[in-house]
Image 1 (cartoon, rainbow, N blue to C red):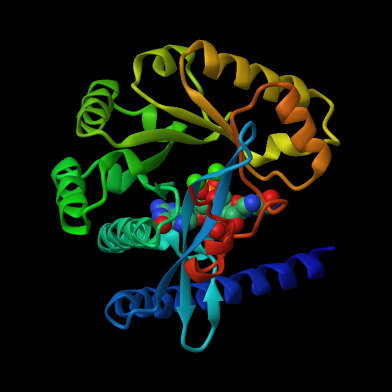
Image 2: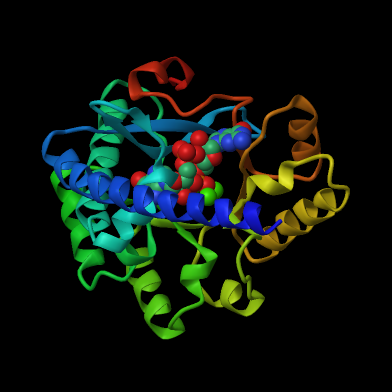
Length: 274
Ligand code: C2E
Ligand code: CA
Ligand code: CA
Ligand code: CA
């Protein structure tokens, strides 16, 4: 047993230093990625469960690394956060998403809302609101077609500051949703105070094998509506889930059943006209 322990320890050591090396490489790669235009946005459609129309597109970041191929966001977002690079990356994401949405509108499709994920660091930028205003002016996108997704954990720090920023964003006319709802420290009091327009039910609650999930989904839907918010279910993969969501009057859905996140050109056939 002792011997085994020692080996494990050794393996642990090497993996730490290798991880560290690859993290440093990754950090310098990440710094170059923006100027080399290696980032892409893929979009996942959101469907209104009553009308059946596509009403939104969530922008999801992809890093097309020259050697490693596509790197998923969860593998580099936290590094980008720690290094502060998330600010520049986030600016790019926001601009690109607004530009793309304006392009879709110019193509004669019914307008959709583009939603963009905001990390904590981005949300706490002092000039966030003026930055967004600037991006909307530059791209010509009307504010009501931009939605910002924040997470519950973000909402828990410094209530006054968050409330003030949210109010400014709402005055500007952009929409704000709470992402991964139900996984963080939800406080019902914050929910009723913050001017949030939509809750996104986290995809872990779509798992049918967990009996209590249906009850949780139901109560999130009912709560959203009583707080005058819209509600969307994420991670919807089956017809049964859709039937359940319709039955419970969920407003919208998003998930692989409808479409995986795709490059913008591959989504136009889903957009409606007239
Ligand atoms: P998220 O915002 O919760 O995005 C949903 C994630 O679930 C996406 O993973 C999406 O591809 C995946 N997904 C969608 N439908 C289904 C489904 O039916 N089943 C399952 N199992 N998964 C589904 P992705 O694209 O890998 O993004 C992961 C996370 O990375 C996002 O989670 C978000 O937190 C973060 N992220 C993505 N883009 C950005 C960005 O531009 N900025 C920031 N700050 N974070 C981002
Ligand atoms: Ca999201
Ligand atoms: Ca989510
Ligand atoms: Ca998430």
